[in-house]
Length: 108
Image (cartoon, rainbow, N blue to C red; front, side, top):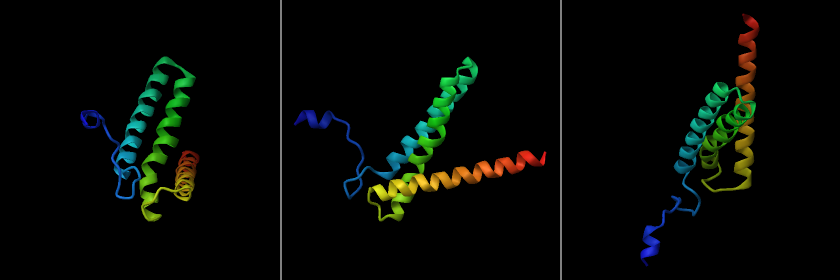
């Protein structure tokens, strides 16, 4: 009985899935880790750290931050469709940001 009290548990929602707040918090943590790796990669001039930092800071963190919001639109249930929709939404947002940055760069 004492062993169960000492274990840390993952916060679950009422449907048995991982709590969206925990997922988003881990996404923010991943963003800051990616940012740290990016800065460290620039300081050490390491291409590998730059790539890992960009991957973590943009793709992984973006997915983890957006997933709880998209999952809410799917009735709050974890599903493959919600994960695919999250990847699609992240792709659309990334495309729009990239397109807008290119427009600003060509003006100057």
